[in-house]
Length: 230
Ligand code: ADP
Ligand code: ADP
Image (cartoon, rainbow, N blue to C red; front, top):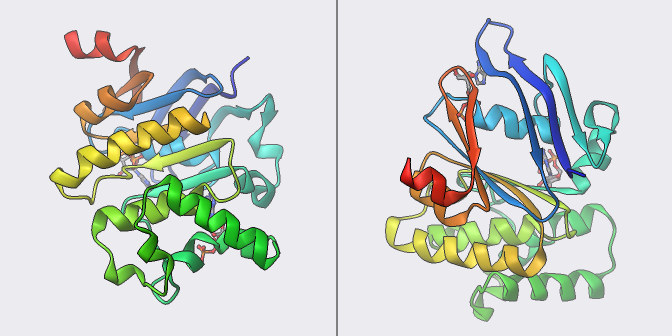
């Protein structure tokens, strides 16, 4: 059974823009699915329907068999990590405090939070020196993105939604970050939907690649080798 099922899902914004044409798509548990296509082809809209930042105008999104429209958004988002370009770290909180955001909201005790933060910063291979009182503006773009990934993983979400997560990282740093992320995914087995406009990134990272075109049409879903040779 699919962990995430898009069942006749479409989105037309109030101004009449068809962002996502009705589509069916299944994502298996543990899969890393990349969504690739030109700017404006509906990838972000589709992603944001999973955590209910956008409501579909047709069809349903099922998470583990349950219609997300019938799930309380706060509870829903607790099980879904969300990483966007430029991350949106809290500038006045240290790296560790940023990573501890959701545990803080959930009222974890200090010791458990501290252990989890250490574990996560190690997982994303941030220099241990950064565990100290460092603030986001002191980090490189790639380091900030690692903090964003660590923060999103804090509660061990079953699903990660990533929207151009490496888009703001310089080209030299990006390759390393992609490989690190692939390793983290293989280690944790989190189900990931990752949006990118970079076909190389889609092919490098994806177990399968979903290709979108203008008008939010899903052209094909294929394994990376097939996409490359087309
Ligand atoms: P992508 O992620 O592939 O760049 P988006 O999902 O961001 O595509 O956008 C798909 C289409 O929907 C675009 O034409 C975009 O301008 C439009 N769109 C996105 N958000 C809104 C909105 N809130 N209101 C109206 N149109 C929107
Ligand atoms: P803020 O945007 O200031 O973080 P929110 O109340 O929107 O405040 O979010 C509270 C927490 O939930 C934050 O830690 C944020 O990372 C997380 N969060 C917010 N929106 C989402 C979402 N759509 N999916 C998953 N987590 C989210």
